[in-house]
Image (cartoon, rainbow, N blue to C red; front, top):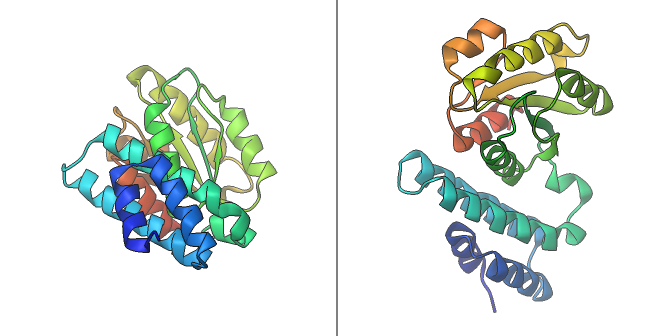
Length: 211
């Protein structure tokens, strides 16, 4: 029989097929679904720390995040609906004019692995679409914007400017990130938080959500 310790190790190693099998086996043997989810969240915490310390890099982190996502899909029918997105809703997207999605996808998966429901708007997202998403999801607490090109930093600034002018501004926190983005730029455009990498973004999302 699979154990929670084995499951944690499989997620860290990014063994997606073995993770799905282990999760199903644990559930079939009567394991607590919430405890099983917590084990995978803990595993991604270890992965995040390894990434921050330079022991692993983006490819390994992506593989681990995908393996967790696969495990969560098996778990979903057994969890209370609020458990998967227990910490709230995050809206994420790459800003207008920017087609890069690897960084954004990694942040989305890491945030999801912390227990958030993630609304992924994709790439090349017009600023108006971020506003519409906030209106459609009044439960959203965080809007995360990604830009990977210096040429699309203006689009990020315009998006933040539009979000800042909305009546719902006081209920959301705006996170920004991407290769050319800095704390100084974040401050200058009126965003709330800058994070340098996916692991930091996931931890900051938890902090912003009061978790």
